[in-house]
Image 1 (cartoon, rainbow, N blue to C red):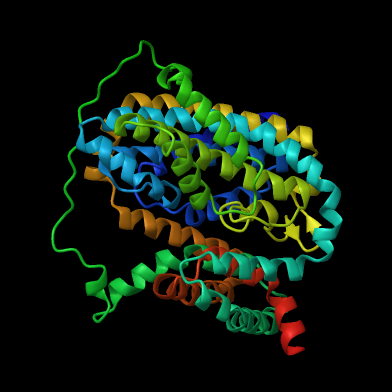
Image 2: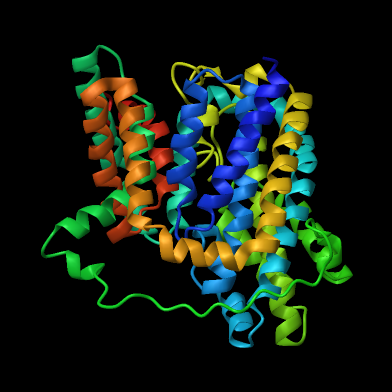
Length: 451
């Protein structure tokens, strides 16, 4: 079977799976994208097909995450959180379906702008790739400090960099002593599922359970569906006004040139910049929502492509989170030494197979979201148990950890998840900080402690 056919099939699979996952409110991108992409890599898929799978998954997930955000007022994932204020206004005036259409249409346009723009910028930056690879340890440490300063925990995130590095290296020493080789997959899987596992642990504790316990089920009021176009596949340029299309195009272009900033922060920033220039709450909300969802797509794509093409090491919040498996999936992909998509694909491959992933996700997720959003939401609310979905991903993580290190891999994964999840939940030490510390931990310990 040719690489092209495999890429198309995997992109279709990602489009279907992540279109459905996006309907489930609160589904974290890192916790679901990392293990699923890892499975595709470890099953031996060609690098081009892995990239097409990931691009399709990202777009599909971020199109359908607009459904719970707009219709229920619950963020579909972390990047949807800045959109809640405007989405809730549209719900209060009885027009959540309009908000949904604007968001999804903005996302489609933002994705197709980001791919070529980010790729061109990455090719320009690639001339500095050797410098970044040779100084990866200090760069990761500096990035941990920078991300920590702008995270919720701020000073505690910075103070805990050295202790967390010591914990990581200690676990790595134990696993190396037992197995004869170090672990990698198990560590970043543990960091990825940390917040999710923490909630499960709180639920099993008599003293902590009241923190997450609910006394009554949530109630949602969904507006009826109203279709204003003919056919199955609506034109996103007709859904948005000319001013909204211009706003989406401009902000998506600008955010495609960034790779070191938080996607959530960029989403909020661009939404505020655009919204502040518009009078009238309805126009302000619809334009901001279309812009914000466009920026979520463009930042995710840019923050994957730029570090991957230019450096080969994960130097962006998305690269160290959801796109982790494109850089590190031992023994197939590694970032030290660099042996991953950076060395296996050329820029034209990234353009072609990225385009394949985006087109297929668009064909699957966009018309589905526009035509069946309400029906799909009702089905998820009535039939899908969120705890079961969480349990499924925990099971996938256990499978991958066992593949890498057997029982030791599983223990290390859950030890890392327990530590990282508690730090994230109670002290605000973000997952991005933890990933950066993981990559820089060897340099930190050897430089600071001389070990």
